[in-house]
Image (cartoon, rainbow, N blue to C red):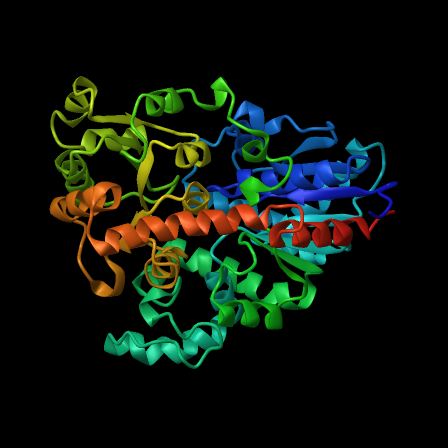
Length: 468
């Protein structure tokens, strides 16, 4: 390994949705691999405060946490979209550069020599030091953003006519349809759609020309060969090192979470359930089914007969069917509804036998790491492309709402959950088998000579090549 004398690396997180813990997992892994280097982890005070206490504990104690200015110190009173807009405007206008200077001052005057930055923070390309980008979403969606302008032009007529053809003109995207794309549809007319298109348009333009390397949250051999080839052709040093939560030094790699990382006792609840018997339900920190689907989902979970663990924001609980929460608590074989779970640990628990999810990329790879088959209900962003891969490429799950297909209904939920957990039909057995096979491939990728570990060592060498 290269000398890390006077090496000061700034790891910069996009401080919204679920990006921060993923960047911290990468930071912890790099800090573990380069213990004599200094690492500054930059994010807003509000986002750092939301990290579980155990996440801030770093082996070797060589990560310092640096607060970046935010538009709203207490995170209250300003709509989420406006906070995002103000933060990104300030970062683009020199805020990131000033934060990097502050990190150097806090490190005793040792200036930052390399930025390992969330790809969303693509203004790091102009920070005056090498930029190693970290992509947290689905790799196929990254490929779509890299050719975003050409794609938008190509699909305009199809959107106007309501067509949904395969994207056969674009290398690596031939198995996806127009309707799978994270842009170009009705969502673009919303304020959030316009903001995300602008942000990701900048990412697509800057990554190929300015990034020294790009880390991807996948393991080698997971993606379809044409996707891997297209990404490698488009990006410098495209390195699949994931899943990030399994990297050396991460909390998941270290073992079971501490009690204060499971405040609602989810793992203790699961410990009293038989193997492969529980349906775990989570739609992440942003996505949520509309009220009618939320009620259908709750009714379907009850009808499935399977015990369930549901991570659901408390502001949505009043939308559940009358008496649902009380019945869940009263029925010993029923369910547990909580506002938050240690998801990666939950999905690795042997009691979990099915995962009902929005198919965000973090959830997909965490489901794989537990060997758990999935029921997908995609909404936006990378979720449709991810759901297509779950159902058509890896074949370890089913999906509602893909290709304009079957909507989420209580009957559909009950059937899908019961089938994945205990169904004897050939398709259900195949999905359970495929989930276990993907888990085994992931484990192999993290063996000493495995693909993710080999690529991670390459990433460490790239980061450590830049020092003052």
